[in-house]
Image (spheres, one colour):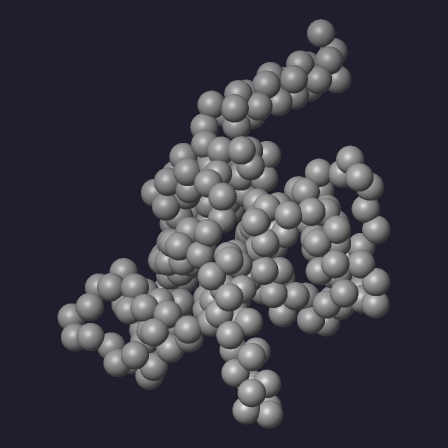
Length: 249
């Protein structure tokens, strides 16, 4: 066997082993491994990539995005970011002390829960809550480093895509989804009748990245909020609109 043939054979075995690894383990498995081996930076980065890849390739294994689900994701990610960089824990404890009043002898997990509860009590609007949760993740990820910053931004965009695709109550048709593009462009997003909701949601994000990159964070948060809206949110918004009109605002 020549050297080239040997390298080719080794490559085939390595590829099969990698595919087997991905097939046999879930995103949560890779996240657990990352937590255990987080001290080995290079290996942790590989595990992050495998985790994110698995989540992207297995959308059917995930629960539909909800506000409660988003809150739990934010809680877990803030804890993971603090494990990756000690400066993140100091940052979040500082937030809690300045905004909510840090409770004595709190564990870091307690502190994260406290600051999330403060956001919920401070902002009654789901859209404001989503925006603040997303901002917390972004600031914490920047403190943790560029790799984490990119990962968190990709996570938020995936969540926005999933929320839009899943919300058949408030966005029942492709037309209603395509209309969301008018937030950053003059016309709705063109679409085909047979296009999947998931694909249309993905194209909305890509279109915003292309046409409105300077405000992509704001758009991502807005789309995520839109995807998490329910009938009660619409009723509340309509009541507020009527009240403002009645008071001449």
